[in-house]
Length: 323
Image 1 (cartoon, rainbow, N blue to C red):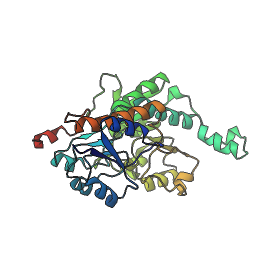
Image 2: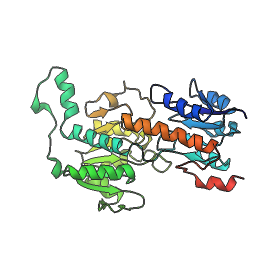
Image 3: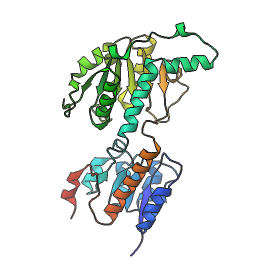
């Protein structure tokens, strides 16, 4: 029997050692893409039996070219870089790893919140530049007097709620379903959340519905002292509108771990402003979370190549098209 081939498009870690070991044990050849252009992925996908992607776009054209493809595995949670509809039509299961970095991302939200609340980012930058001036900083308030609004209340949003409660913050949340999942979190409308929150944390996927959810009209409804925190997807924010809101004092600051595009142009004024704390799409990372992600995502591929139903299939309706 010919050895099966797996195309891995891109990675956010130094090497393919884990993936190579697991695929070798399954007598499967690892093919890695030299770049993530659509043309390159189309060419490589034609001869592969599975595709694994971190951030590269697995488009309609790539999926149509992959005539032998048995599974598309997302090395992550969000699916905005994979054309799930085309995969479903083709009878190809798409998998993700929906719960691998819940603790890491929620920790990162709290870290960014605290960095703003205690002016850590501001003081760090000014002090390193030689200014030792407490009075120059924006006002600081006691956490127990402040409200965190969580937009999106999935696994990560609920973990943020739990940790924020432990710090004494008042917490409200908004989700499309309005379900508090038994947490007791006060669920509110989107308008009520943005109007009343001192910190707003985005913890929801990027979809056609949520793209540029945070734009000029929403910023104008927020407190002038509010800080926006985004660890989900850059496309949730209209960044030109965010910059205008900061310039005009409509809101007080932002903390961004994700951008649109990625990597961003760090020379832009928005990213140079000291009211904006930046991290390089790092919220998901810990040694443990990355090992778990890589192991589980490539295991989904092996399961499908063995003729098994892989774990964490997101498009269960693909089965209607499988013989």
